[in-house]
Each structure stands twice: as C-alpha cells, then as structure tokens.
Amino acid sequence: MLDLGCGSGRRTIELARRGHRVVGLDPDERALAAARAAAKGEKLNIHFLKADTAAIPYRAEIDAVVCLDGAFGQRESDKEDVRCLESARKALKPGGLLLIDALNKEWLMRHFEPNFWEQGEEGKGAVVLDQISFDFERGRLDNRRVIVGADGKRTPSFVSVRVYTLTELKAQLERAGLVYRQSWGGFDGSAYAMESPRVVVLAERPKEERRQRREPDGLPTAIRIKGRK
Image (cartoon, rainbow, N blue to C red; front, side, top):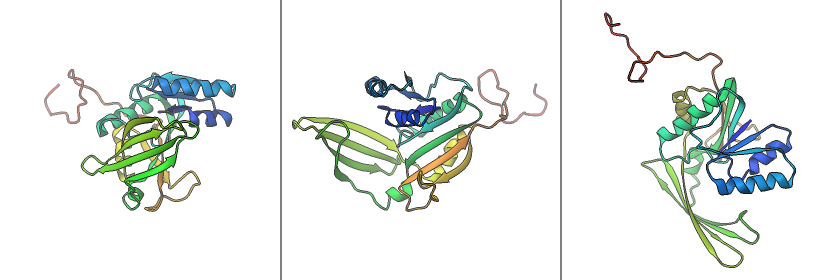
C-alpha cells in the first residue's frame, strides 16, 4: 500500500499498526524525517520515500494507493492534480484501488469559517491560528496559518488546497484513466450527502486498458482521416 502525500506519517503509521505493508511518499524531507523517527520509536518497518506526488517511482507494483486528510488538491492547478492521479494509476497494479479522502466542497460552502483557533499537534502547548479565505475563481481554500508555541514564538505557513465537488472529482479521475467505483460521506460508511464534512472516493485502475496509438508528435490520434496512412 502507498500513502501518497503522507506528511509526518500519522496515517502511514496507523496503517502499519493494523498490519499493512505500507510505503509513505511525500516531497517534504522535514516531514519525512519526523515520520521515520516516529516509526522507529514504535519499531515499525515502514519505508518513507521523498518524491514528487506526480512522479511516483513505481510501475504496476502497488495494490492500493491512499491519499488522505486533504493531501489531494495541494498542487498548483487542476492539470497538476490530474498528473498526480495519472502517476497513482501507473503505480497501481491492474485492478488496484485508489482511495481519496477530502473536504466536501458542498459542506464547506454552507459552513465556511474564515478564522479560528485550535490546539496544535506541532508541539506541546502550541496553538494554531488559521486565517482562511476561499478563492471562488480557482476553487481553492487558502490557509495562512500561524503556530504560536508555548514560548510565544510565532511560525507562519501557507497552504492552498483545491476543494472539489464529487462531480469534479469523478471528472478528474476519468481524465487520469481511473474508474470511479463508489463514494461515502466518511469512514463510518455513511452515504455521501451535502451535509457530509468529508467525501471519500474509491476508484480503480482498469484491469484492461485501451492503448491509443500515438503520432510522432507524441499526441494520441483521436480521428483517422480517410486516405491517410
């Protein structure tokens, strides 16, 4: 199993605790260092790999890919998100499964909160201020976060996430050559609805994929003009 965009490994480690053979992949070396230390502390055999999420270095080797807690959608554009999904498809064995867990845009538009404080996981006594705005033209949730440590030190960061509707997610999966199978409103198996804070989507790499013949310029030939070779 591959945890795509694993970050500091919280989900990866939980999957390993449950007996799964799992690889964590993320482009952030600092987060991976924390993940490796946490796994070592629990004596878990997990391989954490630094790589671009759109350039997964596996080909038809993975049984399942998971992309959880909003890890999908953090690339710069919708096209980049499709590249990420295409990379996941290529890494999967034929018939392999992809599971995406993301924020439900339908719910977000009804419950949007621009600013809030919360207790942080980053350190003991830390508090996090999230200053959130939504870019309607780009469909992105922009979060300017400030982590206030117990010593009063402030650490700023910025995260921008593309928030998809279920319909948009299905379209992205299709563009990447994946087959949509099912969706839920959470990991409790509840039905997806407008009031579901999360959307969990299951997709599959087809067991048989149609191959398109390509012209010398590398583009697929959609229509063959009669009389041309």
